[in-house]
Amino acid sequence: MWTIVMFDLPVDTPKARKAYAMFRKQLLSDGFFKLQFSVYARPSPSKEIANVHVARVERWLPNAGEVRVLEMTDKQFEAMKIFWGRKRRPPESTPQQLEFF
Image 1 (cartoon, rainbow, N blue to C red):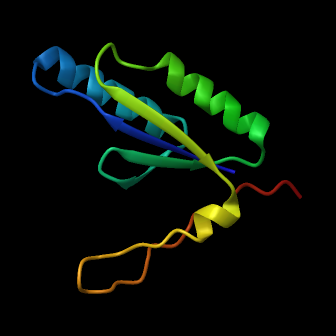
Image 2 (image 1 turned 60 degrees about the horizontal axis):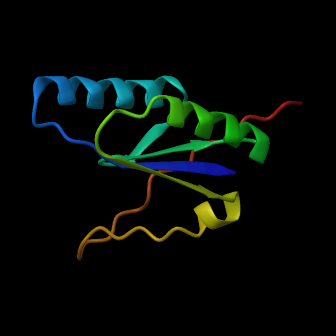
């Protein structure tokens, strides 16, 4: 299970920039990694654990801007197509999920 967080937050004032930076730091500290600008992803071993992280994102919402959360299966995430303009590059390797064995 993958949780994708996409956001468009204002950075027009010092207070807004601080809120943006705090939100981004909280995502990183919770195990999200940057897919591209303002798009972060995190793997979870189950839907229940993914729900915990979605609830955290909801608690961290800044006062302004827009945040969207998308959940997808491992299979859907693996099927993602990545385009790099006219030049093709191999996609970055997908991080491994936790295994408890």
